[in-house]
Structure formats: C-alpha cells, structure tokens
Length: 251
Image 1: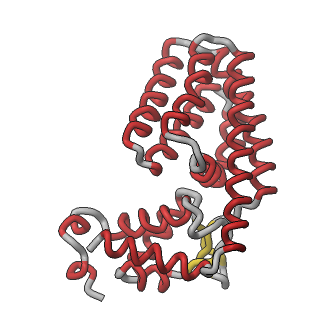
Image 2: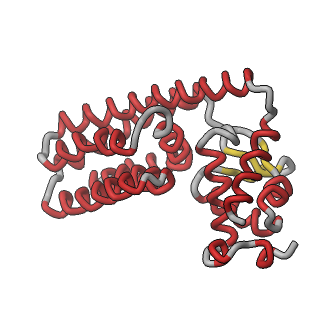
Image 3: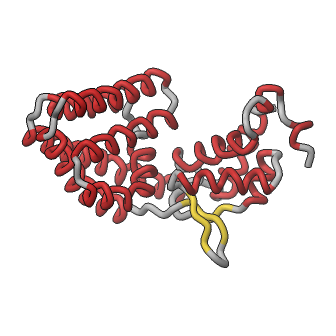
C-alpha cells in the first residue's frame, strides 16, 4: 500500500505511526476498544489505510503507554481492566498516593515546591488545550512527581509496577461527566496541602481523590458493559466505523 500517496500533506508532517497511535489510542480511551478486547494489525491497517508495519509500530508505542499488550500465540489486545480490577486498583492507589502525599508534604522544601509547581502548571496547561491525551499524561506525571518528591525508592518502585494500569485507569476515569477544569480542581487542594507542609491533609485529599476517581471508573466500566450489551453493533462494527471516520479526517 502506498502510504505516502494516500496520506494528506498534514499527515505527512507527522509520523504515520503517530497518526495510527493517535487513532487507536482514541478508540481505547473512549471505550470503542474496551479493556481486554482483541485487536489485529490487519484490521487497523485496512481501516486507517496504513501498512501493517506502521500499525505494529503504533501498537508497540501504546504498549509502552500501558494501553496494549502482545500475548504469545494470541496476538494484540487492549489491556484488561474490569470493575473488580478498578476497585482493587483504587484501593491500592489510595494507600500508595496517601503515603506519598504525606511524605512529600513532610519534605516540603523550596526544591519540592518548585518541582510540584512545575508539574501542576503542566496539568493546567494541558487542561487548557482540552486535549485528553495531554491531560492524562500531565495528570499521571503530577502523581509521579509527588512520588519522586516523597523520597522513598521502595514506594516509587511499588507505584511503577501499577503505572501501566494507572494510565488506562486515569484515562477512563477522566472521561464521564468531568471537564478538564474539574481535573485541575481535583488536584489543586492536594498541591496546596503539600506545598503548605500539611501532611495529614495532603494524605487525606490524596486518598479521597483516588477513591472518587475509582468510583467514577467503575461506573464508566459498568456503562461500557451495558452499552455493549444493548447496542446492535458488534465491537468489530464499532471499531470499523470509528476507523473509517479517522481515515476520512486524515485524508
């Protein structure tokens, strides 16, 4: 397939793999490709008008983001995240982030405050664009900054082990009825408490935020299950439809 001939000038200025990753990422975080669903290189290659090699590169990029995985003998799939997973992840996240916030607040030096301000400013800038991908990345980066500022290598290690699942967790939890400004507001109190050195308050806010987003995510996953059951379209029909739209947008 002649990728350069079919791509528009706008697409040519970007990596074709980036274009494919953007399209597939959008289908994952909006639930068109729900957690645990099987996906194929050929399906996306046909739908997006790109080669399988380009799609493969995109899927590998999304694997690094924690959104897809390659399983031996079964191929590519979206990482699984059930309502039970969401509940367990929410509980674990609440405990880890509460402790990290407490430790970061205890160590609230000028350097800590500066790093925290920079990460929070990045989240506010991302929210101002309305770009969901940027918001999710900035959201996760802010939490990773808090863990780094907590000064505990073991705590950071535990957090890094659940980071891939957290990326999808945050991506899906930030959907629903929340606005970009809501996401900023959720973090403002946490950032203020850490900067002020109020360890107990910072820990409480971090735990409550994790529990709130966990509840939102569980509700979103249940809604996806209901829509999939009630819809007359199969998952393949939905993916094909969205890929057709994405292909037209890029042509």
